[in-house]
Length: 354
Image (cartoon, rainbow, N blue to C red; front, side):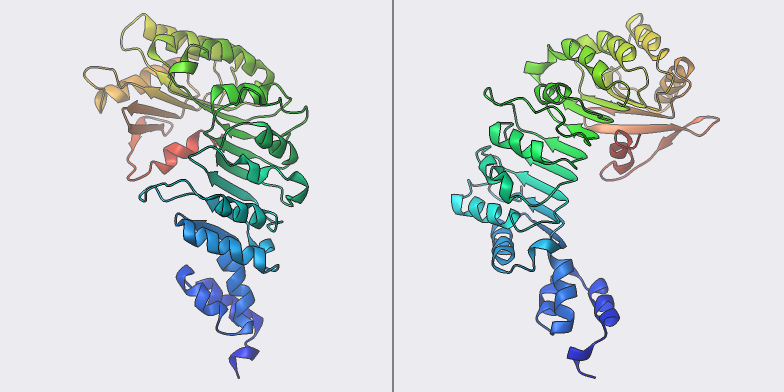
């Protein structure tokens, strides 16, 4: 039997067990293997090497069959390399490749210059409906019009800012959006249209800290669906007022963070009073960076037990000390510490797992 006559199931198994760096060679081996290898090779285009990304886009543009294979597309520069401003011809090639990716589900564009939202501007030529998107781009006119075209988007993260002349989203936009991670001003844009967010994360900075207490009452519009609220990180001087407002506006939350826990009474008892109203809270993330000495071991166990008295529904408590996080979980009888190495995967999933 020649390789040209390999049964489809054999080709599929060979490609399934092949390593990614072996796929280009399989594409050149024979026609029987080429299609399966190309599907797996182009399913995810992700390389911090801009030259590799450019060549992949060239292939997608020049060979019509490849575009529909792409399900996930990442455009970024490896942080370990110098991040130079990319030439316009690179972004033009990215734009042309996007026009070919009709089955694209996930798109990530990391543009440190915040200058290339125009690659998403030609809406009639964009054939895909994303489910997940991550952008480092400005929220401007091009970007808003693109978002309005993405009716299936469910998860959305953006680290860019709001342009002064950016238009409002049209009513009915992003009707399927469940998870949003972005600045406070952009969250306000989403709340201005009917939406059904379940998970909301807002990173604060010096400019938006003072606006937090004014923002929280606006969450009333999504309180019936919102289950996770992560504000990174609530200023310590606002922690008591913030959690009092949150417990009033969104009493049905399952996850809440990141709240600075006051070290001294009566401020800590005010946190307890707010927790009394949150009967469905499962996960609570607290910042104790400014405690002296830092609470560890037995003291953390005592604090989790104390919190559990006022909020019996709590199952997980996360203590944050600087960049370090410790997870405590309740097994039905007592509190136990969860040791996790590396990237804190269990902790990171809590805010989107409810």
